[in-house]
Length: 181
Image (cartoon, rainbow, N blue to C red; front, side, top):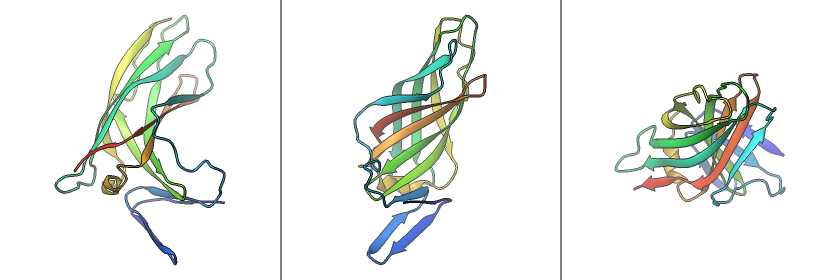
């Protein structure tokens, strides 16, 4: 059974103790399916439909960090994600970067923080070519200061792209958030 609680700040108290999740969406997972939690391995995964002649986004480098000192600001996360766009079609194509999520999880709960990057497009990628774009993190949609409490937990960065044909491509990267205290 999964429960989703949206809109920050969210603070939930249970009889057995206090679990706080302020600044993101909190997901409680009561199932023991082994899917809650992630590893800190540096792995990347792409899912979606790749029709012949489209672009495949590949995360080359991920540099996200949180400034947690001396006082935590409402949006402490900054950084970039470098993406290579590989076009296998016979004509120039592009992908739109719709948005991204930073997902932290334990065996019991997870926190999701929605972030935005600029530029929001791959730009035109030449036919049978490749383009590399550095996307810079611009903003988070809500107060995310709570993220400084999650620095030692595994984090999954999920990027969502849209093709010119309207299909979505999701790329995930497992890592940890670098924090300065």
